[in-house]
Length: 377
Image 1 (cartoon, rainbow, N blue to C red):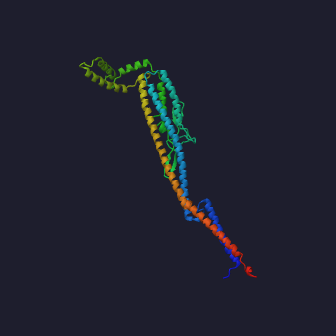
Image 2 (cartoon, rainbow, N blue to C red):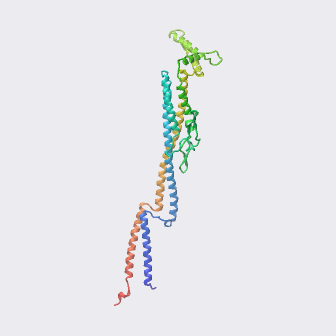
């Protein structure tokens, strides 16, 4: 078979062109530090890498959602903490107001302070997040949840829902709360209770009311229609005991009689309604409000505990998300040839191919210079 000069040139040129193309591709791979640049380089690995990339991007979006959820829950938690502190302060003032040595002026001053607390509580109930959305409006995040009407009552304009975010592939999390369940839930309306306390402290305690209430207590018949006046009977029994000496033969009987009378008197006092403006009325109502405040604090505490549990869950999901992201990255490295050993192999191939090209070029130069004319004398 005869090989013409033209064929030799074509074959050599084709081979070197192929080598140069391979070197260019290897150079691109080394520069990108990745073996698979196009789906045609490894169709199976490229398809699998696309699936993994989509999963990694979803995982990254969940991480962003968790960050947003954490921010919203932090706002809710901060507001609940401030509300609890305010309620604790309110309870302290209510206990303080029950002190019989307090003057009417001091109680009125406390009532003025509570009016400021009322506005403070209203501000907490209308708290917003970093995006300006109300955190206690339920689904109506752009609607102010609580507002005062013309009578000083607070009305709720939100709903009972809760905003949610998808924080993981199988977890949707509440990131807001219904303000009505917190500030007006559990059978206790914080705003109404505060208004009632302010109203109570604004009523002066008078000696006339105290005397009238004492007289009413002494003549309070309990049970109704029984002809018994337990409070007066207790006073009489206690007076008889106080007048007796411990060595009196009847002292034990008098003591037992007074003790039994005390139980009946307490039951009668609990059943009656003290007259407004008396110290007894003030004390009775403040005790009732103290109990209500405890219920409010417990209600807010339950909501705060729920938020805290969700915050802890977000931390756990974040840790799991980071592990997933590392796993996805490693899988992509394996599929696309991004590992150190893959890049090292590409560099070796590039170096070797460069040497082959240089050798081929030298051979081509040598063979292309051959001619029978060189041997003619």
